[in-house]
Image (cartoon, rainbow, N blue to C red; front, side, top):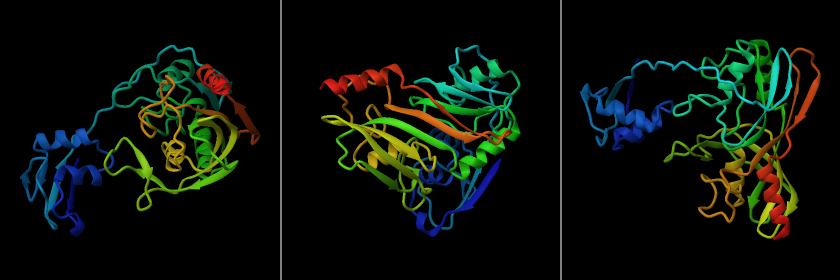
Length: 304
């Protein structure tokens, strides 16, 4: 697959690897480097190295090999199923489980387990890597996730997510003591310009993101909160809480380097999910109990 573009005026003097990482959002930085090393990137019809600085008006051409999707295998797993019928299945996802296969995680994901449990009964809208997946939660976030077994159900739930009518409430322990009892964070979230694995408050290129938070309990140096998502951007709660200087405890990406507790990833739990059933039209709501590590942390905080 070939891609071509002209370097805009404002990008004159930029290194080609930096420019490509920004322009081609679907390519990882390492993929860009491989393309440059293989001679697949031409500037004014000549192959260039990663440190080449382009000028405004230069013609850039890339020859990107078609990616072959790996075969995803069904794996028997002990899934914590909260509800299941012929259209949807709701799972209480444990900490450390990746939702769907991606680079570095082609086995042991929730999709691998669902393929074994549901056989061929998963919607195909999101392709072979994400069958049935209509939304996701981070690897180290626990709690309720809805998966769709057919395209009708997938389209219905996806529409509800787009309309922000799906009820999603999370519990989190955050650093610091929040003074107000509740609040709203309305700040656009987008890709971090320097670190593609991170999101941040991006006023220029971010998408609107709204998080409502409510204090459940205060401790000496931490606060137990409930967060209600109005939108569902990647890492939204983690980015939003960090933006008001109350990052989620255990968050190794957006939190402080040191945490007084030995936590494996952020203390964030998708506790409640409510939606209108795609076939019956009935409103259904499901809760996932706090995982043991989360409850132990709360118990410890109450004694400090």
